[in-house]
Length: 216
Image (tube, rainbow, N blue to C red; front, side, top):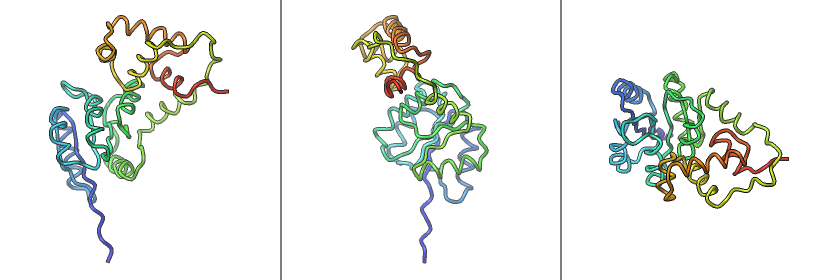
């Protein structure tokens, strides 16, 4: 006799009570899923989730206090086998990249239909990286942008490289300043020089170009 597969153990981190209640109810009434935790703040998630060790976490970005992105960054090393899906209203290019850089492996919009959300949780648990169609197109577009001819004078200084490495970890300018012992204004000046040297317009383009290098 074939054994029934264990249900996917899902935790939800969402500050809006109505959204949290709907997600918890969906998981509890859907075969193959179980809700093991429901947290209304990043602080609660950091306390509860390492103990219950869910298979998948649905994480809101706009949490009060510590953001969902910061929560992902703090949870990921403590739960290396747990997959984290951002579930948010935001389609912002920068937030998408910061979420993925922090350790999220999926990114869905809250308007995703319930059946599609359950399919995405299964896909994530199976090793996939589900994204809403609008989000996937933004990520693909970032990689498809044609590279400009490299400027011989575009070598980043050690300080600029350090700033870019911090940005690649999904950190805000203030966090970069604190980590590197710089003033916020100094960080912004370095970022301006990075953009000018690499001929890009935002942090995502800068990180991709620095990591991928110029293409033929």
